[in-house]
Image (tube, rainbow, N blue to C red; front, side, top):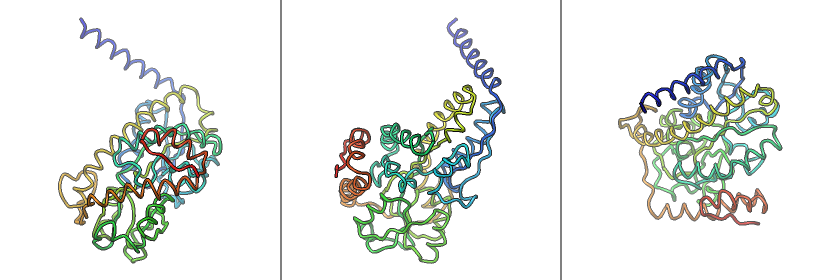
Length: 349
């Protein structure tokens, strides 16, 4: 009897979902997404827009998604373009917007968290602040947080460890990574993701920072000999929508998209666990490697004393540098949100 009742509930739920999907008014969205070679784009973002949303809406919701690297768009301009309504939805690395507002790098400061669960905890604690700033200053609504594999050092030669980074020219993509490198004597070079492989090949930079699997899928292993896996964060990305586009949507479509993007966020964090566990295999030429390319890169172990230095750099140079950029009030708000969640405290200059 109980089994029949449960089956009845499941059938009713399925019918309700089906009816709700069939009742959705037709909507077409323009989306600009993340860099196409990254695992987040390959395994999460593109399938979400091209398959998941289409199927869940029974064809009512369609999207034209183009990765930003296929449009020659500067990562740092994504939020501005979204504000202008150039696209309805956008996926972007939030830390790259920190030149406009230091709060945009606050839940993923360089080396702040060392596992995906803590990274998500930090960003959840700061979700209200990011959404507030986006809506207030950019006419944009935050829908979801995601991330990538740990951001690590890919180097042309085999490095000795943390001390071996001193004096090297290293590609980074946000201010907080600059703070970290300043603490170890490295020279930070800002460079778009698509420009890094030729720059490494030509010796314009000695190393570059990107995800342990993102670099693999983008061909960095072909121009580097070693990976130093000291983490500088998770390259947190967000899915956001232009507020005018959002307000024009039928309430049913708004509810549908809110539900879908919540599930999309869960999937992105689940993917990080799989890609992170596979990254070392792929980069070392060991199976299983189903999400990347087999390569022969030397992975230089992080020594215990280097992790102690890492902790001091995060709690010193990184937090201090960010707090100075953001200001005392901003730092106090961080302490009440991210800091409280992680048991850390930023100085209030």
